[in-house]
Image (cartoon, rainbow, N blue to C red; front, top):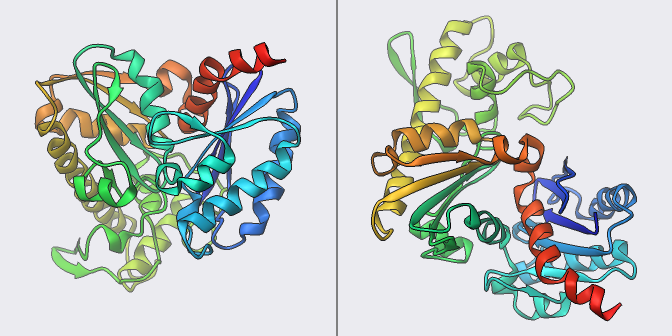
Length: 345
């Protein structure tokens, strides 16, 4: 291991080496941006053999920063502190690495570039024809078209990608239920959903068994454990009730309805992206903590039904897939930058 990749997000800090050691640490950076260094220091201690840092980020969008440029600068200043004398290379949506100063000077290319690094790396798995990378994480879904192994997005910034449908702002953990639907079935009658952060999509997939219970995990809407009992309570509150009024059967039906709503939204976005690709989409790559949902999207999207599916969690392991962007920048830096570093040394 000689390269450490860092994907610094607004809710999670992900690290991976080019040899596939990987980890993910939750950090709600908008609550405490100064804690970023507290997370990065132990990561650097764990991967102390790294000679080079490869960085990508999405944390710059957090509203604790005045602008994205400010966020990029703050993140990079922290990385520079923990890096010591190690060189730092920052991935940009131009498809190249930049120095930290170049990254600051070109914030439009630096901001939210992690998806591009991942697509550039995994595109080699589908070197011919049209393919679609579906990466579903805790917060967002990326639908990235690949042609002859190279990313061919319609948009590159978050705004452009939201407009094109290549970025869908919902994932399998943090998305509030009220952001997905304003109405759910209850005892045969439609019931409005409270526009409040009582529950998230995480509770839906806990309820349906797609995500395993973890009583030690309290990164939920109310800070209580990621268990079936607690998820039932959170979903009940999202329709103005509690567990004395809403049964587990009720919450299961609500969860099924919301999961179907999210799936339809993602299938429509995927079909829209696939419709712009040259020829038929022959391959789909799936990755992220929401790979189970990505597989359903591939199976139920009309233009993707005949595509061959390649699962990155199965190929690289779930831990690496969850930190796929960090792994991608590490691999790309090992190929592109490390040889020059060795030559200069």
